[in-house]
Image 1 (cartoon, helix red, strand yellow):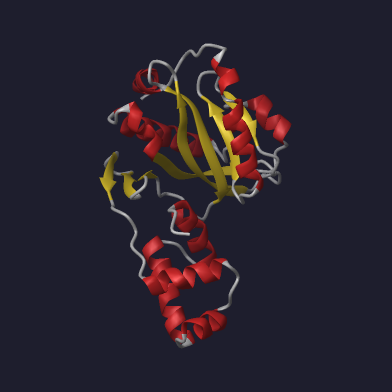
Image 2: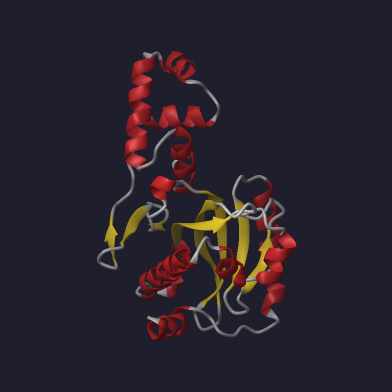
Length: 252
């Protein structure tokens, strides 16, 4: 796989960018810094040419590693902090699968796609911590290859750990990676009813089930039914996980 991986990297990732272009990204960095301040996700900008991070926001970095350390490590952050060798091989397969998918799409369309996947890292106590990544192309080189991408990292969950998806905006068509066949399956967007979405929006705003029931003029058992439908459709275990994933899917 190593040779195929290198060939695919050469096809998708930029290998050189004029230094003057780094001055052009200051307005973009300012906008992302502002967005990071009001987001619960952790933002970082990945430089695929220099193989490092050119921006890491001020929230504790993923596994509580200091921001300065993360910036110094660059891409080595992943090899040094994934939970074990097996998880690192899994990460390489995910990267290969995503690049393979994107290589079949015109690079001018890449901005409409995001990759969503979870990786298990070691936290400061050496215990496993699942981190969800939502990775989106940001800027291309003059040759149309990926130069910068933006990643929003957040807490992941066991039930969604093996789900690797490509999301296409704005209709949010989903393409899910099939581990057994090493290919992608189109899944289509997730459809929530108006009642299910109303319940989820109010749960995200902090309302209890009985409060939502009163607002909707429905029984609490009906609200529980809507909640269970949402949890099932999103493939998660509880309302908290559903809210997190719904934000990824732009349902909230």
